[in-house]
Image (cartoon, rainbow, N blue to C red; front, side):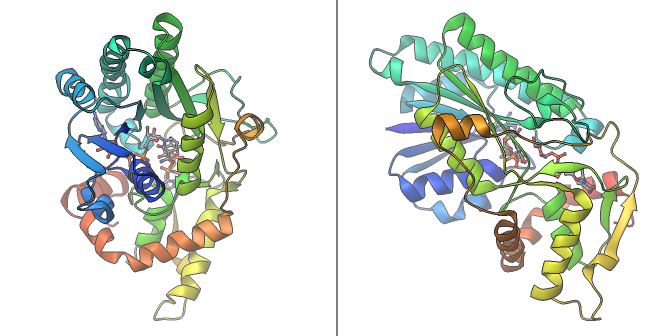
Amino acid sequence: MTILVTGAAGFIGSNFVIDWLAQSNETVVNLDKLTYAGNLHNLAALEGNPAHVFVQADIGDSATVSQLLSTHQPRAVLNFAAESHVDRSIHGPEDFIQTNVLGTFRLLESVRAYWQALAEPEKGAFRFLHVSTDEVYGSLGPNDAPFAETNAFEPNSPYSASKAASDHLVRAWHHTYGLPVLTTNCSNNYGPFHFPEKLIPLVITNALAGKPLPIYGDGMQIRDWLYVSDHCSAIRTVLAQGQLGETYNIGGWNEQPNIEIVRTICTLLDTLRPRADGRSYASQISYVTDRPGHDRRYAIDAQKIERALGWRPAETFESGIRKTVQWYLDNQDWVAQVQSGAYREWVTQQYGQAS
Ligand code: NAD
Ligand code: DAU
């Protein structure tokens, strides 16, 4: 048996494949374009493992995707591939439309042709699982109920609009063509292999480098943080037991303002790797210009997946963030490798020369 996973050289996809192969012998075909966010070093632990087959390709390359489907005959396709960073989508939205909208459309068409030609029982057992985000629901006020699967889509950034479009395409391919789809909408992840353009890894790596810790606006924006291996276990659960055509919200029951996240990281580092001058890393905090259109609050109501499929996160934020900070301390070579050339250009564009 085989599954095909797209975007599995990125942050969540690589964690998913590593976790998958730690508990199963089922082959994973990993299709990834290797954009700036894709990194084969994330998958170094799988080197020499015949159950991991890596193919560098674009989800929008229909000929290659069709060829791979026909060769490997997967029982499921899991779509993690996307442009994923909100700030980059503000500077340059076109790549987001190209991959998240057009790429998902082309992938759906390749998968539909493959699935339609399958014989039973493989056709009935096949699944297309689309990995999406809570950002499609827009922004919550301080007293609003968390996002439920029934909330209307109100995306606010080019990134979230492109993900919302992809979710709608997946839904339509189920309703119109009967493609057996599942969609997950997850909150903010953190953990190993998180690219240091995102808040948590950026703060850890900047702190250790003696650089400013940039807080957008007043730092009181709220996110609902989930340790990445919990997201991976939720996806395995939905793949195994999810109802066709349904969407499942995934979250950590862990809402926190950004400034609190940053202070927690500083406190952990003060203990694990104290600064030479004895001052707290919190002295590096620097308030900077806010993100345009910055969503104020995200929070996930994860009752549906808990009631229907019995999934709850295993990690608390306290244990997960400690593991994460320790992982970055132990993997400084990985950090140095991802912070080469193109990364420096992004940091200068986003935060200015001094960063
Ligand atoms: P990431 O940016 O770290 O990784 C994305 C991966 O997709 C990279 O390996 C990249 O090379 C690959 N890719 C990009 N365009 C491609 C294309 N056209 N064809 C093939 N591969 C391509 O992203 P991530 O944080 O791991 O997110 C993975 C998925 O989970 C995304 O769909 C994202 O929207 C979703 N998601 C992320 C979070 C989060 O907090 N990071 C939360 C909820 C949902
Ligand atoms: O909610 C799920 C989403 O979470 C995913 O769909 C996205 O792919 C993922 O990137 C993430 O989006 P966010 O925009 O919430 O994540 P980011 O780490 O970029 O920012 C988290 C919060 O921290 C957000 O309110 C912006 C703020 N921030 C971010 C950076 C990079 C800062 O204050 N300073 C920064 O330098």
